[in-house]
Length: 88
Image (cartoon, rainbow, N blue to C red; front, side, top):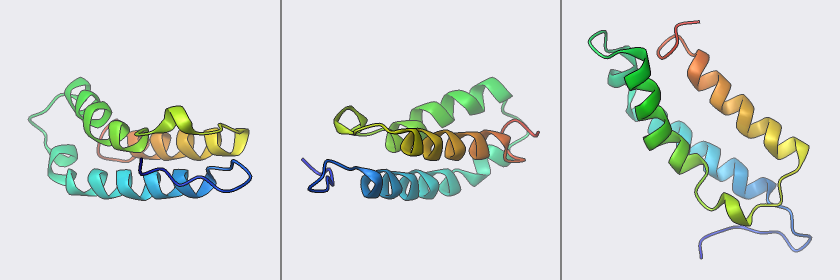
């Protein structure tokens, strides 16, 4: 069904692919993140709907380890902290 699963049940490669795809969507929405006419909460809703949905597609089949959880959380934090959304 489009998921990459290793023989040992690992999904690290799948998570890396999903992060790359989400990063692509995030960069395509650059104008949205730079927009001064949109409020922060609107940008966060767009982020959740467009970027996080791509990132987490198929996650119910993943074997979630601490490493995978850290990779996903790092990506989300970097996107939100990025000078475009939360301006931290």
